[in-house]
Image (cartoon, rainbow, N blue to C red; front, side, top):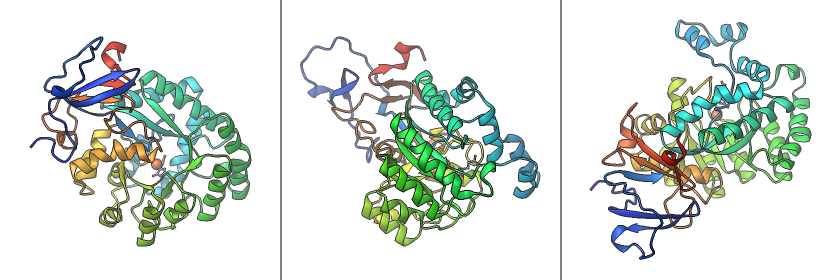
Length: 391
Ligand code: DI6
Ligand code: FE
């Protein structure tokens, strides 16, 4: 029957009070208390608001020209020589004012909201100096307010080495650990600290220094791990009780075991896999057998996943990675929330925040099935409908 496997309640009622779900169940069982206002969502499906737990959606400019060069046969080295790659986004982001960054990033956030996202994680990592990283984190908060999204900000100073530290890697890691993380923790500008542990980015030793500093300052960690090669980053992340390890195409058996042991979430980013035309998939079956929760996210970024559509990420989780639609949807609700360390969102239960998505579908599998359809009827963010707040 429609909705089997999703924990669906048919002919349901949801009571909302003070921005929270006060009661949920079959409409015939609903408590007799008189509601101040009732609304019929007859014929629609309601899910938790989607949680996109891995994005870099705040950045300036884009890399479409570079992508076009690649489509015409240019190599990575040629593009780098022509000033392309991640450092071109760093230059653009450094040069942008905070208002500019907000203006350029807002349409991406609004596109996500229009597809049912209510919580989005946004990473810094295109500033790579203290002022520019803080500017990105402030812009992320403003974008969230304007797009009516809850933002979970993450500090990703260890994204790539800034050009001015080319000859002195250790000094940049010092700057992250001794100057940036203490200020970010003190001013509560981020909820977590991430790093890109990869041959082209930071070594496991450098990553460990960043994790140690984050932990000292009371911030949780997470990691871009095993995307292009196996650096055993997931094992290192487990040692620091990370929330998640993300990408994981090259994750080995030891990594799966370490993630299971420490209770981490595996965040899968199938749109980045698609965009890079990768062929090696994450070890999904091994993760399932080890009962590691699977989350799905967009990785929205200008280089490897110019994707502001959570529903396309769900589709690709199914078509490219072989997830079942109910598994994929759990990956962008329940397990996306878990990857952010949040227990107040991600499921429809009494006591949780009333963050809901209301869909024009006849079965929840349609959320993973359509590409480019207009499925969202409404969202509720902390109990307030987009319709009443004029989004
Ligand atoms: N992994 C990626 O694929 C991206 N960042 C990361 O940590 C690349 C980001 C970019 O190219 O702008
Ligand atoms: Fe990423």
